[in-house]
Image 1 (cartoon, helix red, strand yellow):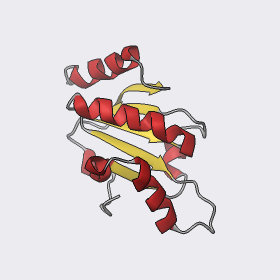
Image 2: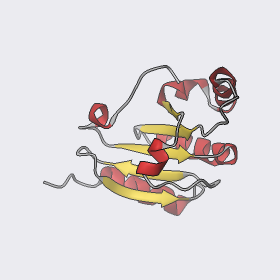
Image 3: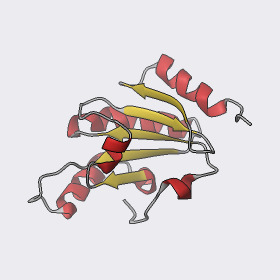
Image 4: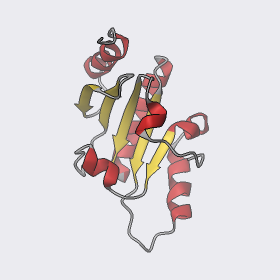
Amino acid sequence: MTGQTYGRGSMRGRRFVLVVGRTRRSAPPCKKWVIALAKANATVFQVIVADKPWYLPRGLVLREIRKFTPAAYYANVLVEWYRGFAKSWQIPKDNAPHVIVIDERSRVLARLRGKLTDARLKKVQIALTSKPEA
């Protein structure tokens, strides 16, 4: 939301988590994931696939996003205005958060779907702390 552009190349060499939401209903559970992962010192980005009708101004959509995103996390919110990201990562349009852990070589270490639970958080933490493969 800060206007910075990210691509796979700019993330290479870093282990991080993407929390992806495709609908407005997925925003609250995505927010819980982002806050829990940030508290666990993970590098986490919330990806919002803003599959909006053409007639809605982007400014209006961004205002709505700012309403439910804590200001401390604005720099970690990535907005996808089209569906390319969701298609390339095969993320269906549903109300569930999709959590993807990516390693230093851009490989997917873990992929989960659903609300935050202790068991799911543990799976993500294990993936984040696993040793890099040679």
